[in-house]
Amino acid sequence: MRLSSKTMYALRALFDITFHSHGKATKIDAIAARENVPPRFLEQIFQDLKAAQIVGSKRGPNGGYFLLRSPETITIGEVVRAMEGGVEHHCCFGSDAEVREKCKVSAKCVTASVWRDISVQLNAIMDAVTLSELALRGEALRLTRDSDAGLTYTI
Amino acid sequence: MRLSSKTMYALRALFDITFHSHGKATKIDAIAARENVPPRFLEQIFQDLKAAQIVGSKRGPNGGYFLLRSPETITIGEVVRAMEGGVEHHCCFGSDAEVREKCKVSAKCVTASVWRDISVQLNAIMDAVTLSELALRGEALRLTRDSDAGLTYTI
DNA sequence: CTAATCTTGACCTTTCCAGTCAAGATTAGC
DNA sequence: GCTAATCTTGACTGGAAAGGTCAAGATTAG
Image (cartoon, rainbow over all chains, first blue to last red; front, side, top):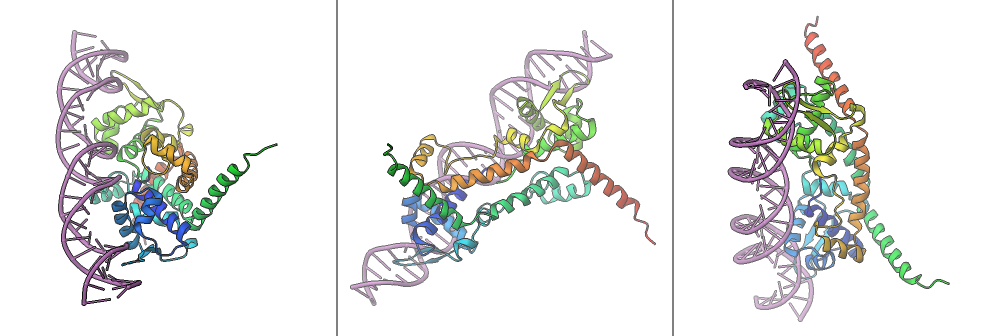
């Protein structure tokens, strides 16, 4: 019930491309430095994001990874599902096919049905947040910090 | 982003006590047999549930585990948090204290704030489902199956 | 007393996470 | 066409966590 670092890194990386490059090609090393993510690991992460059709890539000098769609259309939920194989609707216990089948027959699988409902709701929540919202929050945080610093003078 | 088997087993076990014993003392072996859970593992699980003040225990003949409160007051969320240590609000990446501190200072931790919001909502969703609701679903499923079986005769 | 239960805690195996690395394929710009 | 900057592919690894197992002891009903 926790996000893997991989997913968190992926979100940070996508935020970075949105926030610093407005979705345009950005190189791994720059992202890794800004977001404090192991660069080699980030490569692997971007492969997954690319397979999920969330980012595209360009090789060679001035290359990098870029968003394939506009930030308003990329949701947190999509990213999480891409990285973690989705919130698992695993029926009852285990991912074993035979057990799942047996479970269906026994019809005792109440917990699974409840969990399925919950995961649908969770996906809806995550799909309600987009990359552009992340970027907005970034601005907000930054602004807050700046104004905080600026407002140190009180009467 | 998935529930561990331990949590699923815990939910099934609590459902079992509610559904078959109405919350009263039930022995591990009976639950394990009905719910198809490894009995030794179930022992371990009940220790956690007991530590979380969700169940109590009675030793000796006619002993077993029982609900400490009525099923309407025990939520899925509570059980999940007890078993998994809650939905982790882990700030940014890693559970390392130093990193978390640095993260706070940098104020770049947008993803963490978003995830915190999401996890609050998720907990609310899970807290909206109680053990008695599970029991109701159990009845519903059973009824459905029975009537299905009974209606095999069609004209 | 004794048989049925839970209790405690050590132990084990397997899988997966988090991360590293090397060698190759592509492309921009000179 | 060279060369340097990038991504690409895929193998590899150490450590931790998941998922169980087991044995010996403490309690209690009858």
